Length: 399
Picture 1 (tube, rainbow, N blue to C red):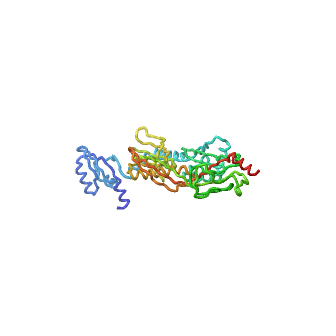
Picture 2: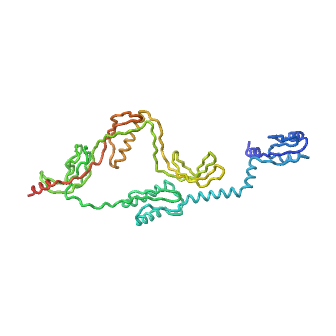
Picture 3: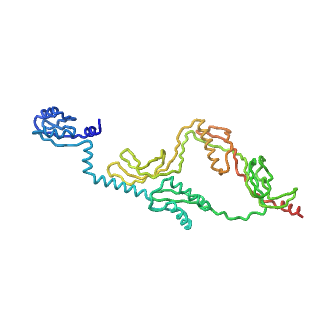
């Protein structure tokens, strides 16, 4: 069946036929091969019949004394008829929605959240260079991330942290400017000492004398880089020791995980989406990459006063939800992962976890308690001034 035949079969008309001896009229239609799709007898002189629209002209030639009126139409022609009758209203609604959606995708305000006016003016200039200003189309999350990274990279000496967030029809820029460290007067003499008990793994000294080497065990307060420069056990010079010391440090951590584990993590990705709700159906407009899991803040834009139809805007935040009943092994594994995450949060880029061991697992009510032992490569640099008696000893030696 080709498309033309298919459309012809879809186009039907319902007719009201009035007259005497309707049975004879029906037989005449059948004789002339007019398909009767549906026949309903209202009374002795009235019938409702449904036929293909293509047969209507042939039927009119056969009606003779019968009165025939079109009651309803079906198929494409019905749509055309309703469109012809309501096209002005439908076009107005469509154009109105199109204009509303277009206006909602334009930025009308750029708000920089910072007290210092000079900083705000500086950031405004930097943002305008990258196309962030009023009366422009909204940029995607990925574009804003690239712009943010570029501005931070070009101003590493000024900007510590920056965030560009789309809130409705405005950008909100939050920034943390890099604090210029005030130059503190360094002590005349100081040592670099161990911040905590550890095994020394790396010593970097630009000034001072290294007196503890790799694989040496040190306790908190032990001198690693001395501010006293000695020759044959005699102090020849006193300096402020400079450098970094990294060591192997140990921690015991206890982590509790409930067997019914529920967690919601935000990924940082956000999206503004317009939706249409029609009875129990919901449709997202122009959202090519919807979030699988999300939290929504909904603003109602329009709602029909009778029918359950509404048009609204959603500020969506992508989340990762975990809701499950854990087995014992899964609870232990989840606790280990949580412990590692917490330890990673306190470490800098140059620091790292060397090893993790599970010491003990204990079931406590509806929770799994896991004791863990961490071996960590960590910055153990601390400073200690030379004591007064050490200075006096140096002066006596020189005399």
